[in-house]
Image (cartoon, rainbow, N blue to C red):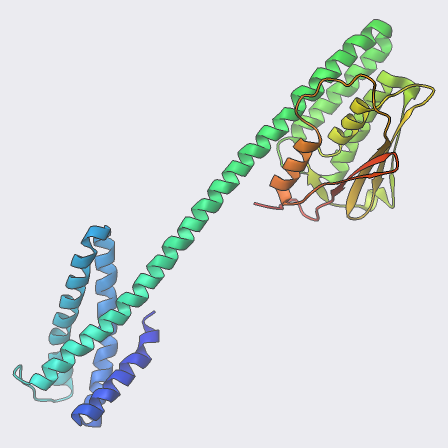
Amino acid sequence: MNWMLIPFISVFNCLFLFIFRSNFQQAILFTLMGASMMCIMSYINITLSLHIKDQQSSVKRYILSYLLGIGSYFLIWPIFAHLNGLNWAISDGRLMFIFVVSSFLMNTLILAMQNRVVVQHEKDQAELENYQLKTANAEASNLLLKQQIHPHFLFNSLNSLKALYRKDINQGERYLMLLADFLRSSVSASQTKLSPLSEELELSRNYLEMQQIRFGSALQWSIDGAAQNEIKGFIPAFSIQPLLENAIKHNELTECNPLNIHVRLSPHSVKVSNVIRPKETEESASGSGLANLAERYRLCCDEEIKISIEGNVFTVEIKILAHGDHHH
């Protein structure tokens, strides 16, 4: 901030050189002294702003700043005058006028620039605090939305497990093993907002195998796409599984007319599609599902999920993110 005032000081002293017909030596002397005073007054103003912070005392701070600035001029002038061998007297009205006006103008410039820096700093600080508050709210909302998934899924899984044990104990045991693996993986995935695509696909395969035990040949599924193992990226944790659950929940499944769920991968997105065959009797909704996933995508990465219906095929497309640190 200080060096920016040097041109103003030079112009100011050249103006006084012209008005009062001072010699070149005095103009140089005033310029050097003005540069020194600029540093002294900057230090004075910074010290005053640190010790007098409340708005009610701002007038007091400004008065002290101007008085100390003028006083500093009168204290430092004898040193410069002695070094340059100049004779002077306190009764020299022209000299005293130069000191007062120079101090006033310079101090005004310093205060203006200092206040601008302070205002900008306070604005940046307020924006930072606002951003941190929004981030904290987003984190809390995201955590709440993620927690809605697990009770809903666990409720359905336990009901399925109970039914399987009544029909086939061996299938129930296998289902229980798959459920344990799924929950173990889901606990690890829930620690982060974004998960690697490979982990989400593994969770999805695990889930679909559990559901195939439950429904048998009434459920058919596939996960395909170009170079599955080569597609890298991240998606919000538990993004694909709710789409699979949504398809099973809202569509009729029979051995004569099985439900086909297709998960198709591309370098930039994942598409989950199924033929629409609404159930005659809908299962009770828990409040999670597509709305939950859409909100989590918005909070995590400011992205939207794409929902489309072509003929009787229902498709949801979610974007694959290049990095695991999207969004605040």
